[in-house]
Structure formats: C-alpha cells, structure tokens
Amino acid sequence: MPRPLDAIFPSPEVLLAMEPEEIAGFLLEYLHELEGTNAFLHRTNLTGADGPFYRYAGAHFQKVCNAIAEAWMWLLRDGMIAPRPDAAAMDIVFVTRRGRQFENHGDLEAYRRAALLHDETLDGLLAQRVVPAFRRGDYDTAVFTAFKEVEVRVRAAGGYSHGEIGTQLMQAAFNPESGPLTDTTRESSERVAMMSLFAGAIGMFKNPGSHRNVEFDASEAAALIHFANYLLGVVEARRAASL
Image (cartoon, rainbow, N blue to C red; front, side):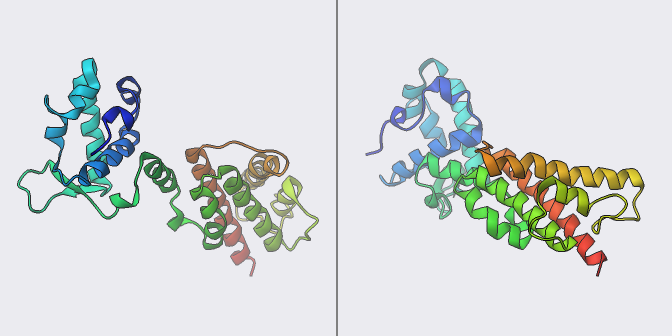
C-alpha cells in the first residue's frame, strides 16, 4: 500500500514554490510505491478529480496538477519514466531502469547536482581528482583540489621548485616580460591580463581553502571546476609551445 501523498511530498504551498526538477524527485518516489502495487502509473488518473492529488492539494488543486505535469515531463525527458509499450495511452508509464536507481527524492537530487559537472569534458587528471568529491557533495574540497591542480601544473610547466606557491608563482610564471609560460605573441596588455587571471584565480579559489572552510553550492562548484579546467588548458598549451 503506497504512503499518502502528504507523507512523501511537502505541503502544496511549498511544492508550488519548487522547480519541476525538484518536484520530480518526490513524484518518482511516489511512482516507485505505486509500481509496487501493480497499479497503472497513469498521470490523468493520478491528477483527476477522483485521484490522490485532488485530496492532497485542496484549494491548490489546479496549480498542483500543473506542477505535477511539469515534473512528469522532466522525468520523461531524463528517461526516469517511459510510456508503457503495451498501453495505448501515452500517459501510462513505467519506471525505467534508470529511474529505479533513485529510490527517493534525495537520490534524484544528488543525481541532479552531479549532472551539473560535465566531467567528460574535463582534463583527465583533473577529473580523477575532483569528480569523486563533487559527486558526494564535498564542493569545498572539489574546488580547492581543482585550483591546487592548476598551481601544481604551473609549477611543473614553468620549472619551479616546490617552494614557489600561490599568487607569487602565478605572477612569476606569467610575468608579461619574462615568464616562462607567457605567450609573447599576445599584446602586452593581454599578457598582463593573463597573469592577473591566474593570480586572481589562485588567490580567490585556492588560497582561502587552504586556511578555512569555504562554502559553495553545486552550481558554483561546477562552474569553478570548469574554470580551473580552462586554466589547465592554457598551461598545457604553453607547455607544448615551449617544447
């Protein structure tokens, strides 16, 4: 017997303030329970006047039904549910193999956060070092590790000792006139800007994490890791050019 909706979903007022992908986690959790009863997973029946959402939503019924329809489409788009091949109505679905991997809304929320980081586009070594931390939600560690990798690569590519660290290392490696990683084909102002870009990145996103906890959400952390990935690309291009 599936649990009542109010044991799975937040209140209708809270639900209506959520994004479709957030509601989708609760909806998938409910569909898991319905599927265990061998009931048809039929959107129209669920949100009809005789369905469970009518009793749950009260005065917010129509708005809640619209929000559930949006979440339903999100689950379809991401392959968590699919139309039953033996049913004529497209609104009759089953929970897919992918959908069965996420038993509750917390599992799906973790999946959504992990998907923000397009790890297939990352430098291979960077991915090995940051993706596990990112996927478990340790965004502080993931961002710190990403910019530490930038520092390590700059040091190696520039031929510096382990004692050379932080913003001073970046300023030396990308010194507009004499830095070993400076692209002398660029305009002087651009060389200065590149030095400032690296020094600022390390000063802002690596150094603070060495001394204190720095809070990032999933979106911020993913963006910063991709920024670090860009910087690594610059370093590797300059290393290759100097060979």
